[in-house]
Image (tube, rainbow, N blue to C red; front, side, top):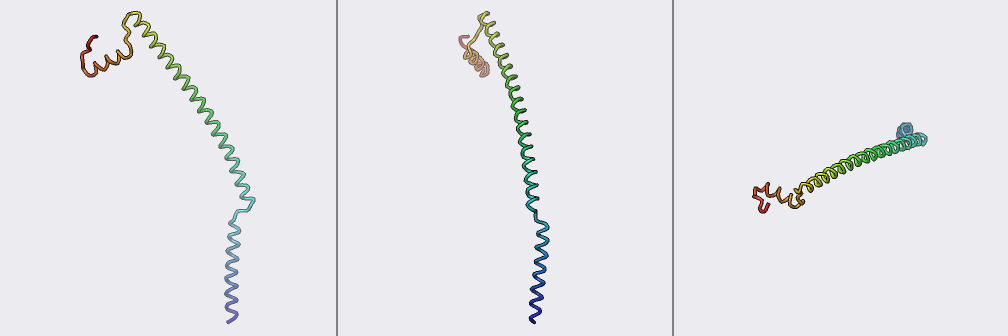
Amino acid sequence: MSDEPENFTLALLRKIDGKVDSLREEMATKSDVADVRSELRSEIHSLRADVGSDIMNLEKQIKELEKRLSDQISGLRRSVMEYHSSQIGHGVLLTEFEERLRRLEEHVGLTPEGH
């Protein structure tokens, strides 16, 4: 009877030892972890450079759009000023309030009084 528990214990220990060996084979070594860390750092630096480049391109595009919009607004402002100047010369200039009132009266269907 004393041989059986020893054999059983030895069998369990051998089984555990085999599992530990298979786990050791699957575990990453410090070298493996260092390699992965190095690759990740390299990829992160590359990604930072790509993102930085993309941001600079977007800023350039935004500045170009701002300039085009500013040019369009300036052109519109110039056209309005020229129109008002020509209308002043003809004596037909309405103030902004009078123009809005006229549009409102037309929209509501009222006859303009005093115009």
